[in-house]
Amino acid sequence: MISAVESRFAVPAKSKREVWQRIEFLTVGAAIFFSPVNVLRLNQFYFTLSDALFSLALILGLINGRIPLRPLGRVSTVVWLSGLCCIAFGLLISSLVSPDPIRGLVVPGQYIFAYFIVLLIIAGRPVEETIKLAKFYILSVFLMCVHAVYLIHWDGQKNTTFVSGSGRFTGFVERENECAALIALAVPILLLVATTGKLRKIYVLIAVPVMGYGIMLTGSNSGLACLAYGLMVFLLITANWKRLLAVGGVALAAAAVMLDAGREYLPAIFQKRVLGALETGDLSQAGTFDHRLELIHEAMGLVESNFWVGLGADQYMVVSYIGRPVHNVYLLMWNEGGIVAVSGFLIMLLAGLGPIVRAFKLPGGLPFAACGFVCVSMFLLAVNAFTHVYGRFWSVPIILSITLAQAYCRSWHSQFSQPHFFGPERR
Picture 1 (cartoon, helix red, strand yellow):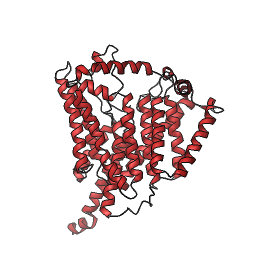
Picture 2 (cartoon, helix red, strand yellow):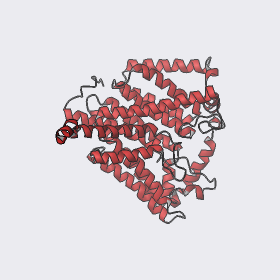
Picture 3 (tube, rainbow, N blue to C red):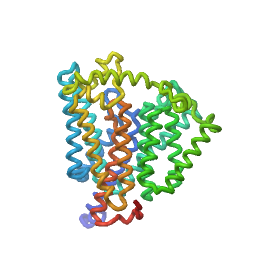
Picture 4 (cartoon, rainbow, N blue to C red):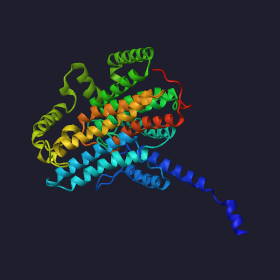
């Protein structure tokens, strides 16, 4: 009798598995949502709330058998991992002969977590599920921009955790330029989700201006350039000429109005750091441009002596007479990890073009290819102005854009035709 009652109320094995898969998916979604929230981290070492959620998601993924062996396809996965190994090897070997060899374990470990563990957790999912994960990321960035408007225009904060002393919005990332670039990277993903019909156009019309205004509040020249690049290239690849001309006309008209009658409505920090440099062409008005250029010249002079074996992880600021790391990932990796590390960085990111090219060749895959290409190319350009990029707020949008393309390819090949949930795509 007891066994009969137990069998009546027992949960089928299939249902249990679905519940665990649902928990795993929501954990990954939460990890992606909190990936821009760099402020929630340990003081002892770099480990954020997002990292804790990714670690939990990895355990759940292993239990559910959801971890892919070839997250980017056979060839692209090998090339990606080869590049990542070069980064780790170059920094590790260089650090062994440096004053602080422990950093040779810490920094490569951060890169491995950001570009391998996170990749395993996000990749290998159906395209619809991957799009849902992209929505988590878009929502997080959008809320950060709304938070910026509230803090600066309503609360009037300055010199706090989220707003610098000069009035620039630092965001959940706690860094102005990084925050702006993060917002710009979210825009192509937003446009992709809207193009596939998984997000209403009205939400795009609201989100894009809010994100653009959020970048203005950071006062970041590089962020504004990234936003313009992302919008322009995505529209060039995906839009027909009529739509492109219409969007261009609206953008020019809006710019003319804002620079004339609407100038006083622009954020003060944007007028001070960005608008003045744009109008006069004087880059010295663009914040710390001269100071960063000095660091770049110094780094270029040190490359020859650090060509094969670098200074070691996080050792550039120790030898620099300015006492700060150069804001250029290529020069920083070259000086700290030698030619092997910087070559590995390029190899790893270029491996992401594999799924992008495959998506471009498939019917209906153009928006996925455009999103991936814009995000990867934007990242390759943007890192000319940043230091190490192992923060998960960097790796998540890049991996998301590439895995979206890979997920579409897998979906298309599994059905041998264009997936039913996408409309016909015109090239």
